[in-house]
Length: 219
Image (tube, rainbow, N blue to C red; front, side):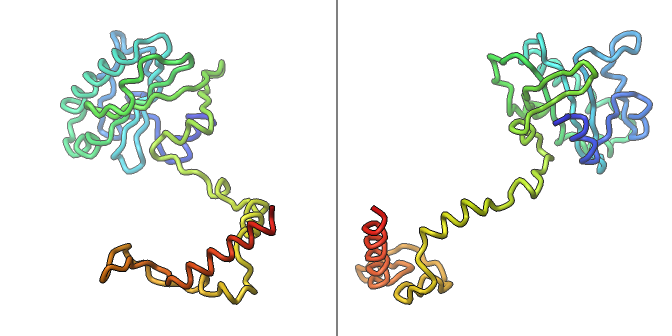
């Protein structure tokens, strides 16, 4: 999946350009190098449509990840003090700032992942394409906090469902009709020396007999 498209679909806006950021009363040029140059590792800066989340997308290739995260923590800490003339804008963001550090080659030191020192850190493997797109696998994209798995991913597998139904007692089996009765869950506890359970002793006996019969007929 394309990282930029994931942010766009979720309503996040890239404000790495200082002109765009000024619309949100933020001075992102604080992160620029001399000559108004954006640091090479600084790829995107996304703000949520409610202006209460900020995602720094960083290129971790060829970098010491721990040093990179530490350096950006210091920059972001200063930004939280001087990054806007509107204190309310900063207050809305300061507890919801995330560094997404992207890498291609395996990272040996992942100690920064999950760190909450100034910002939260996410280390995500990806592929940097020649056209500038950043591809992330379906297995990794779920690490992005706001990403919602589409409902289609949870559609029932009817083949498996039918197989499972074959292992359950038949609805025509009157001897086990008590299984279809909704009952209140009770805590397993001793009452007058007797263990309190959801089913009666006779009902457990019927279940045991059915399991034994099922096992004998399916050997």
